[in-house]
Length: 221
Ligand code: 5GP
Image 1 (cartoon, rainbow, N blue to C red):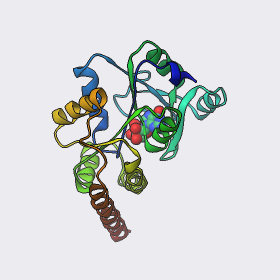
Image 2 (spheres, rainbow, N blue to C red):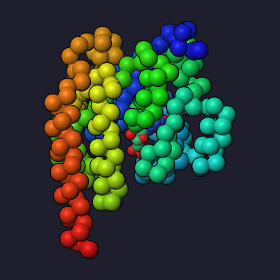
Image 3 (spheres, helix red, strand yellow):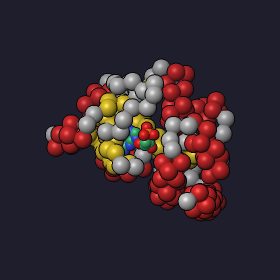
Image 4 (cartoon, rainbow, N blue to C red):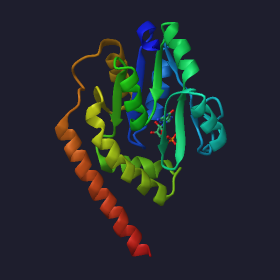
């Protein structure tokens, strides 16, 4: 098992869609030069400005399924109709070299990693509120209203998994969030541990937004 020989730390970062976790991770990589970021493979189409090999390896179903068959992934999952997976080789190479590796992945994959690597540090990034999440998703204008609603349905399941993470970080101010994240990875402090009251409030708000979006859709039809 590779985790016995592992020298670097495996860091899993998940979060709701629209919380800006991509921006947080990008800043973490810019501000600190001792991390390696794993580039995932996906079957979803590239968004404008996304580059193959930088943001993702964009592949077809067949190629992805071949990688699964060859046991080429550390973890993989389906998310809103597409496959996403972490190629094994790069991560193993970095860990062997003693470099900490960041995986920005969704919750099913995060749980697979936690099972294989119990010592991995897992962090869930969230917006301060579900309303703020809707604002950010609508503001970035990369998804249709229907896709955003799909992401909210998914967020309910994701929120249920929040308590399985070691830490929950609120991305309110970017600088602060990045700093907190670095501190968590390097020092594993007790603050930012999971807070059940926060989860309860967030889930309630998610359901309110889902109901509001459904009513708005029905009005249009
Ligand atoms: P997006 O399509 O917005 O880039 O990503 C959708 C979701 O897939 C995000 O929650 C992202 O963190 C997750 N994701 C990206 N790469 C991977 C991966 O390799 N494995 C898993 N399980 N999830 C991933």
